Length: 494
Image 1: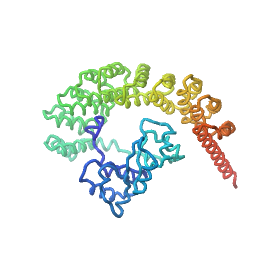
Image 2 (image 1 turned 30 degrees about the vertical axis):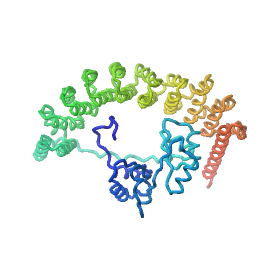
Image 3 (image 1 turned 60 degrees about the vertical axis):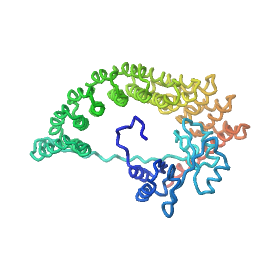
Image 4 (image 1 turned 90 degrees about the vertical axis):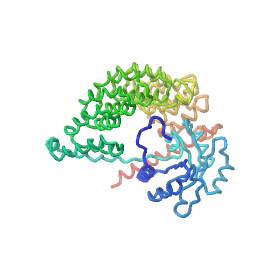
């Protein structure tokens, strides 16, 4: 079932997802919930030549597969409390895969222990932590984008009044006015790629049609015409009695980047009865970036009970990025309102990260929060900001709360800036083992040889986490030194 955020949007086909995974060499967890679709699903997987890269879950567990079909592996879900060696061994004996979920948690220890237990597939929302544990290096080759196809504007303008083109447009307009929804939508799509000078006048006329469906298709097509001067024609539809028409009008103004429509959007924002349209309005205001939108968006955030709409407000504030928006985001980040608020709080963190260096003091303050989720979100936002946050983070290594020092060390490790090495070496003398363990891991990830001596003094530490992270860090630094020496040797060869 789709969340409200994606209602009324086109749903990708299973074949689309399979082709995407094949193109990018990705594994796919396929959770089929509806019965009687098993054979069709297997057929699509086979046609896409993805049998060996699909893990089956849901109703597919009840299907007996033979031949190539059996290449797909069945996942057996294990809750955290049931992840024992005995149960995992039993799953493996039955030629199945053990599947576990770790969400809202970026602890290396938790993920590492689940891997050590023998779990085959783990769903995480911090994949970079898992790849770091498995020592997987992401290597992406930069590819030049193909140059966009140049268009001959003079020829296009000359074609605007060509008789055959005018006849084509009239035919498409007539189709939009017809009762068949799919054909009308296809006609509206076809009008998008024709010269605006030929299509826009006809589409503007349709905006006042008595049929909501016609108005909906017309404003949708206008949103892609690239001519923001039509904003005045679209604005009246913001008050249309039909919800779908209002939504298409909002999205059209967003696509046209119609900054002139900000006052009209402000006017309808607090009166909009539909949550999905309200969500689209605040996101459109965010995309338009007008700083005067901060106050009305904050009013909606305070008034609205739906965290779906609130998350849209947070996203918009992050894009606007003014000082008032920044302070509002910081307050949302530290709001502990349960699971419903989790996504909005995450968006608040990324919004502050997008603002950049100006938001560093607020995020550093959030590292001192008593709630782990706040510290985690703030930490990753600082990772995204990167080098501009390092100086402030180094100061946080001296905070009174051990949880803050631990998160700070991890954050510095993920940023990977060598200017933090000396401070992290001093952190190895911290009285709290979690802080020492995190600092050891961070030094290993940064990879500076200057940390070797201090780390080697911890390889026999009594604390398991400290010892394991120190050993891993030494191995990483030595491997980096060997690789550097090898590369230098190759460059010096005649």
